[in-house]
Each structure stands twice: as structure tokens, then as C-alpha cells.
Image (cartoon, rainbow, N blue to C red; front, side, top):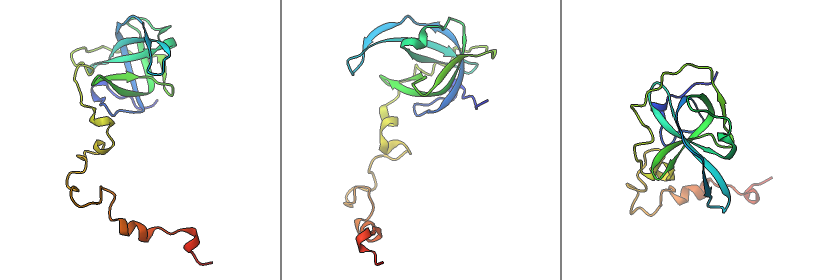
Length: 161
């Protein structure tokens, strides 16, 4: 069995996570129009494990066979931010099945309650970098010394046979 991530350990940058949680709130499906102009059905379901709870976003057919109180195992899920709040997603590469595990859900810690800035979606901030601070004014824009890059680049027509 793949390693299970506890809900309290999820972060806005969590990807490829396996989560087991009990449905504690089963939201009603809503019809929305996506940014691509498609009509979709979306439901927000709150799942909890023994460490906390999080909102799980389910699309179209993902909601058809789930019940309030059911325990779900989500494989290869990921976290997205919706207006700055974490949402657990199954996505097209993930799976969601009923689990036989016993869970005593804890609803004290709501991981979808905290608001995050969108720094996790910004490439420069993934590893804690603060943009180009420290590189300002040196003209290299974070790409290193252009001369070194040119010298280490070998084109095929420069090589001797």
C-alpha cells in the first residue's frame, strides 16, 4: 500500500498524495460554466481523518456513488488553491475508491480554512527564493554569466571530425 498522507500534513504545493478520509459533509452538486465555456457539475465534500479535515472538490461523475459517512481512499490526489484556500482534488490521473479502514474523524483542524497567498504557484518562490532579490542591479536577470554560457555551448558545426 502506498504511503498515506495525513490531512494535517497537506500543503498548497502537495502533489501525488494518497489520503484516506471520512465524508463528514456531503455538499449538493452545483452547475457551473468553466473558463473554457463547458457546463460542469461540481460538489464540495468535506473529508476528515484523525488529524483534521479538508474540502474535497468533486467533478461530474465523481459524486454519483458517494454517501455521507463513507470512507474514501484517494490515490494520486493534489492540492489546489481556490481563492487562496486549499482544496483536495482527485484529478484525471487520480483515483477515488471506498476504503475499509476505520477512521475516527477529527474536525478541529480545518485545512481549507486558512488563506494562502498564491506564492506556491509562482516559479520563483517554489524553493523559498524571493524573486531576484540579491541579483538586482547586476544585469544578469538570474541567468548567470552570459559569457560562461556561450563558452560552454558547442554547436555541431563547430566540432572537428
